[in-house]
Length: 353
Image (cartoon, rainbow, N blue to C red; front, side):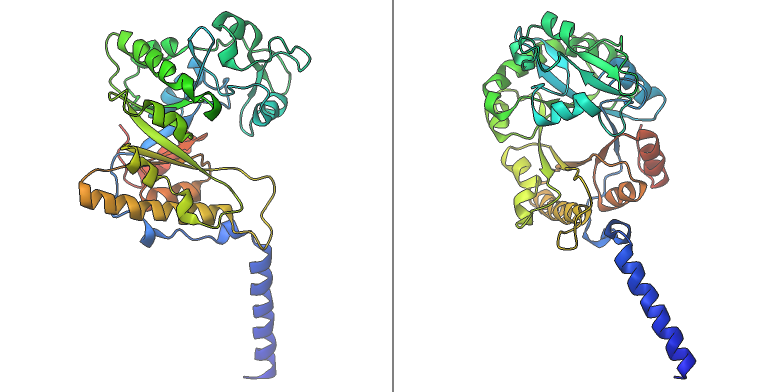
């Protein structure tokens, strides 16, 4: 090799090294399709997270209407809380004083146009858990406001009854993921909440044509309701932390679904403030690894019992990650960008309607 060629080769090597060091690991992460499911689903759920939150307040009828009829979703993710007088409301923050609720009240979510609002921190009389307020008290003191102008929204906080009456008229709706926001330390309320949900759904005429999933991240809640409400499908939802995972099998969601005899399993990735340092595994890589373990367990369970557990991923808004997850074999993705996800799913040959 001549001197000039050696110089060019060294220059090229240096360039590659600099590129590898400076490029975020997420952009280099490949999709391990060989590690995906052997049972690739045809039907796919485009699940909008709390509706079209870039235009309307989360968990409201206008947000769901926009997501279904404009943004292309065929499924909804809805947050459910319960008031002191046993009314089911569509509301995310069971406790307004929890760390996450305080952040949401101050800044809102990253893509949301509106943020939840409530009594100021000094008004301790009304800053209570939803379960400690009547429906009238809750509606009077809580709502939504514009993140930029702080103007209060006049969009109503719906009850489950409101949602059901609207949803039964929606031909495009295939699946509703009802997230039970009951905390683990109030799991004793779970059977009461399920009885109310049963009454509301049973009162709807005509009966809903879409499927329901009742989901919770708390095994304490599932233990109290799994054998008492056979008409419902349940999901134990696992959240993958961005750091600190040593035992990957300990974060899989399918084994819990098998134990509880659920037909769904949810697996989400918690967001992390800042990028991981060089000693920390990329959260997306960790998520994919746990997910592929779930596929392996799910596929073995399917082969031995013929029972199929649908896997739902959440919440993803990046096109490359959406394509990767669909390639791997997830049955649905929760997203803030249903229009993008719908386009990708159709492009990849999935059946949506």
